[in-house]
Amino acid sequence: MAKVDRKRVVLAIGAHPDDVEFGCGATMAKLASEGAEIYFVVCTDGNRGSRQHQIARESLVNNRHQETIKASQILGAKEVIFLNEEDGNLVADIHFKEKIVRLIRKYQPEMIFTHDPKWFYLIRDNGQAAVNHTDHRACGEAVLDAVYPLARDLQSFPQHIQEGLSTHHVPELYLFNFEQPNFVFDVSTTIEAKIKSIKTHHSQIDDPQKITENIKSRLAKIGQEFGYKYGEGFIKLTFIH
Ligand SMILES: [Zn+2]
Image (tube, rainbow, N blue to C red; front, side, top):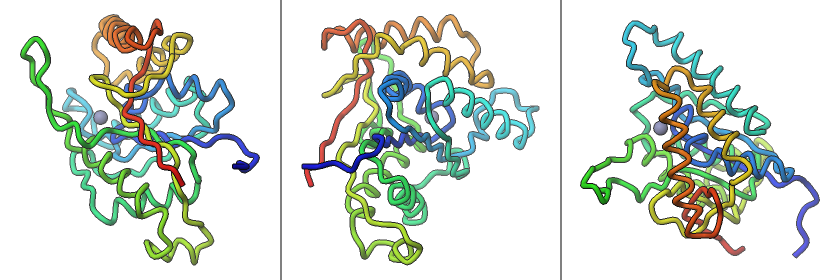
């Protein structure tokens, strides 16, 4: 089927500043190098993301915006869209879904990357438990609902259509998944860009060396099974039109 002659558009939607870099940063750098037009969406303002209590909320939010813009440039993104929902309070309600649907209809992406809402908690092999952040789950849930059926259906948010936007069918959705991915991108040439982008989030990082080691060992493990030196893993959902 003939495709519209334009750059491949990608939306990477994370709950907090730095989620996209951690979840799919190396893949973004890879797709950008292949000519994709990439937009980062940061849903919350990241105002709880500090252990330094003396940092004023406004200054933290501003720092985190600047860090995110720098990181996005390292990864080759065209723009960062900040939705500025409150950190820790993200809810997959109809108001938030409307914002995501609006972005999908505006940018008409071929690919969307986001959190996996099915990941609630896990227990690692060493017995260590982890709970996925509530904002991550809410973000993933809202994006899934926005992709199907909301962005596709004319009757959902008809005000968008009156404003001149069109409905959109998103063909591919990729959910961050480091544990049991069904699809892995070879990011052997872009892992360094991912690490560099994460290190721009100074407000979040105590030990840059440890972060580097963790990312390398994680991505090496994911890549190994698929025959790559380093890989980023996802649950890939393909929606056939
Ligand atoms: Zn997060």
